[in-house]
Amino acid sequence: MTRKKQKRHSDRHDLAGEYRYGDSGQIFLLVIFIITWITDSFIFHFSCLNSVRFTFLFRLPISLVILFFSGYFAQSGLKIIFGKIRENPEIVNTGVFNIVRHPIYLGSILFYLGIIVLFPTWASIILFVAITAFYYFISLYEEKLLLQKFGDRYKKYQKEVPMLIPFFRKKINNRPDNC
Image: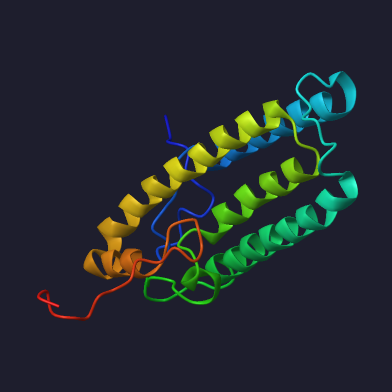
């Protein structure tokens, strides 16, 4: 009696789905990042960046702003998606989902960036690149599921709202081709 492990919200018909190892991958990368960042920043100092140009007091407010937006995107996205069950599946394009298509992942990426700004190390920057690539990969996977579920409506949403980086919208040109 072998059962496939299901996601905890697999019974939600209004959601398109997630990458099977998305949650465990995120936890694994978070643990690796924290261990590496703490040991490098505070214990061994293997790859700490010289921060003479930008003192801690200069980096602190920048980091706090990034961490604020991290929490805003993640919390708002989670509340919109998991705050209510939609009777009819629909493309969610309100709130933070009108800014980016994957605000929860953007919030996670900004969290790592905020920590790195505060205490930068080469090791944490390298891990940040790997973590960002992982979030991009699972975003692409989920986009395929959303395209299967919503088709052309989701393609239109993709053209209107950027995937992970706000303010980089594709402009929809309503002019005739010869203009």
